[in-house]
Length: 421
DNA sequence: TCTGGGGTCCTAGGACCC
DNA sequence: TCTGGGGTCCTAGGACCC
Image 1 (cartoon, protein in one colour):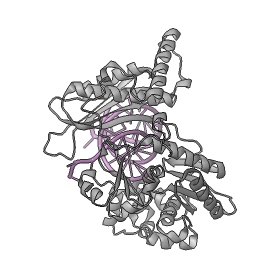
Image 2 (tube, chains in turn brown, yellow, green):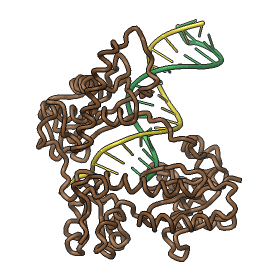
Image 3 (cartoon, helix red, strand yellow):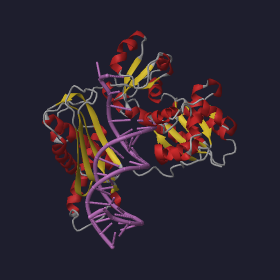
Image 4 (cartoon, chains in turn orange, red, purple):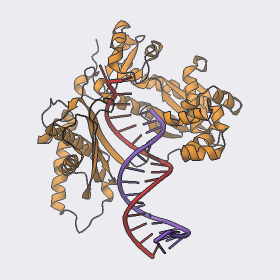
């Protein structure tokens, strides 16, 4: 009989910020998305104030001030580093760990004699070594473990760990709205409501055939998982990446083609950097541009173009060049754009590269490797964008995102180490 | 609502093949 | 042709996740 646990960091980004500002122990904290657009993490005090997830920051500025909320721009260098520390504690103590997201991991506890005791010990150790509070749910399927973790977090009497036994399963499902279940999003919840389904218990009582046709196999798997039949295995190894994306909303709307070219150039360069760091090469470069959908009074355009590369490549100038050609196809004159992005597709490991007659001569490949290695090394040491292509050079462009309240990169940047005393 | 950025998977439909 | 059955590959769009 399989047994899974889900470890979920509580209010992760807000908890990370609090770690370095202990004086904020009881202060409500919110963390904003890129562009300082909306709220993406809230401490429990902020939740208690009624600030909802994804609340647009501008609407809540007044409430932030009135209640003395500490507001942070998101600081992914910090969160990524703390996440790695949490995961390494889990990997030290648990037999099999699947890192599911920056703040969650599944554990395979099949065959573990006292799973609950192990999880309590894990929770203690993570708190001691990283300062991050976690909630842990234990159950026979991943989907049930998610629900159990939610219960562990909500009910203080469980002290952070809840094991869902078969006897309690239907009770928990009856107390759970269908839309709260992992994998049931906005759309599916609406369909289910139209069929009279309110709770997760109603959902598992639907005929399988209806679920299969209306919600696809994905929905069917969720239904079986809620019944205690495991359909979602542990991922043995992290799945190979299928795409690399770099996109941004702009600080202001952009009509000018040249500004858009600068932005796309820098996104493409950044995407190529990520590609090399992952040891991959891309076979195609996709570019998209979007006008703001929420501004219906403006003319709307969603442009997209995909450019194939003659050979898999991780070479920045080649990727930038393809991206700019894609932009020429996707761009239409006379629109005010909010957002653009570059997606790299058809990823293959750089090491497995097929040599072909069309391949570059060895000395040219060597030259390219040397050039990108220097760029990556300089950027790693002096900060992203220290060395970049001429087209994207100007640091203070109108398309740069707003990020006024970022905390220091305490753990990843020497200049921003916390000061003691 | 002045709504972020980075991903994955599924399905339908078209092109093409034997 | 009022066109069979079976297959692959590709793309666009939808849905969902954190």
